[in-house]
Image 1 (cartoon, rainbow, N blue to C red):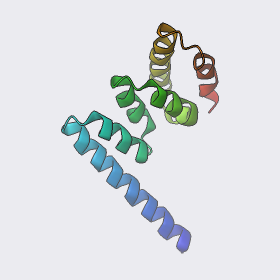
Image 2: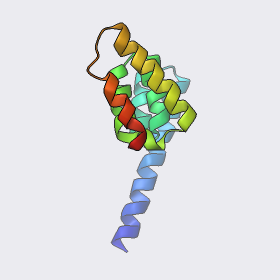
Image 3: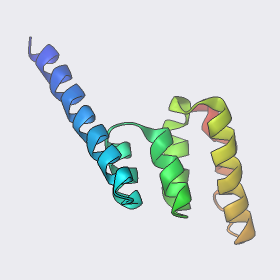
Length: 104
């Protein structure tokens, strides 16, 4: 019984974050929308918004930790843009890690 209640609470919480994310997007509050999508476990949308803001460390984290939840074609596009970002800034530290993200 407790487990079912906990699952319901988690689902309601994710739904609230999702609704908040949609409101933030409508209001053009992209950073807040990205954070709310992340809290709602909508990691792909969160990564897209962080990418739009140029916040590639957040994109990197989402790809490495939640890459499996991305649509494969979106994952490749986001990953390629992030790679180009790091290479263009000669920050090669993160580039090899993107090769591992499809297994996560």
